Image (cartoon, rainbow, N blue to C red):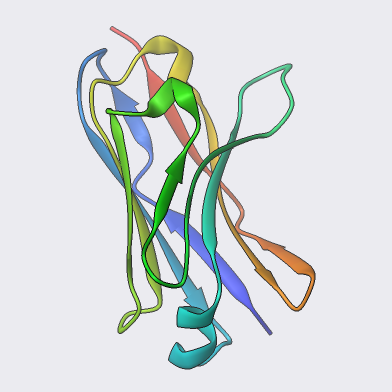
Length: 118
């Protein structure tokens, strides 16, 4: 059974950095490395939105609001995807979710809370 577990969230001051991790289990390294991984976020009262994706070949893609501030990466040897966030703003406050779509099935983690506040 595929499981995604996020970690690394917390409270950070505006302008500060934070790194999120998402560890995938229940799949082989080959399977993990084959599929695009993504990070989404959902702020209170808002719909879940795509933040960044990284293809099997390591090609990243970002929503405009985080370009230049966030970096997505993956370590296929560890079945882990990361989201390095810098220059955080209060509007980045949200629950961040890891996603993987395998054979047309979406898998989600439980989410990790990121709060940007002074």
